[in-house]
Image (cartoon, rainbow, N blue to C red; front, side, top):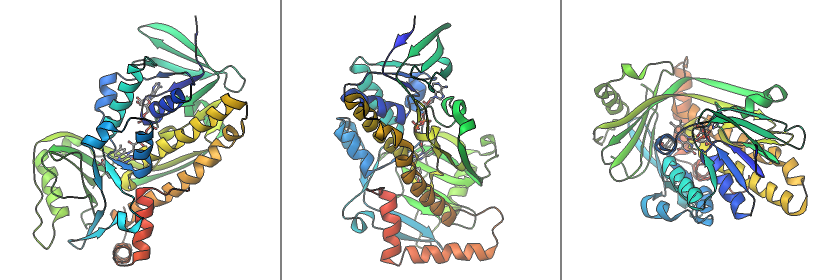
Length: 392
Ligand code: FAD
Ligand code: PHB
């Protein structure tokens, strides 16, 4: 027998979970299907920076409590090049806006706990998920759980299943795909050591990009540019720390604290967008529809912005039968998606050693960094994009 709900959501990442919560607040029922186990989803280390708008939304949803007690507000970032740090005062340049340092897995934990506490449906460890019927008015999601085949009948399907999910491939033949792969990736570590900096440090160095981020007063998160095809087994902890010391070194004797490495991995880097983000009654949101390189710290924030629009459009449709916001969903999302794509590409291009770049291009990067750190107008461009534009 098929399960019946209003909105069938595939994927319990930030997009699927925030969407379900917003729909619940509007009195709209949903079921979330997640391929992984709860523990896996809650422990997956990924994003760390929330835009002001994302933090405000979590607050408005009544989910900001732990973010306020354990998260950290930052009012600036550093750009480091020629072995010197230059601060971009984000809040001074944006009328007081700021960013929150609060791990994606903490956001996900808060959302899952709220959903289960409210007795709402969230099914983990489902497999063989497939979507159909979205070109008509009776979409269906088939899946297996505990070895049994099951089915959900719904009004609408939300494809929140990330870059490797099944929803985008189900409609890909009708989409325009934009894909740009960078000739480098990031090697990221989480280390049990107090951060060596009070604010994030983005570094342009001749050996490659490096980023010092953090999660708490005891946990540091650091990244270095690497070959995207490299095997993490080639990187001993000692080799990683040696490379970090070389890239973060300054002329004023700044010191990088070392500590036990709790987690490490390599992520390739790409820019990817599909257009449109919808077909019939199937709507894509978050990484299922677009990927940005992480240099702008935008992926999670963009995913949350998509589902904010989708929830508003579905609410209007259920309340009044007016489908105009649903029809306009993709266009409304893509305006911000392309702005953020450009910002993320720009930050990436300014800070990384580009595969076959000659010395001319390296000097252009330094000229750009000199400009961004000395002109208030240029610094404001970076700052307003980094904290998140309000009206795009
Ligand atoms: P996901 O988080 O990928 O969630 C999709 C979910 O769907 C997953 O739980 C997956 O298991 C599930 N799923 C997949 N297939 C199926 C299926 N067939 N059936 C059911 N479920 C399925 N973003 C920022 O904003 N700030 C940052 O600082 C930042 N740093 C990053 C650093 C790194 C190293 C990386 C890798 C990413 C970073 N990002 C950052 C990007 C951010 O993590 C993603 O953009 C974000 O996770 C997107 O959320 P989502 O819900 O769209 O997708
Ligand atoms: C992180 O803390 O994981 C992080 C911070 C800034 C970025 C990307 C990732 O640009």
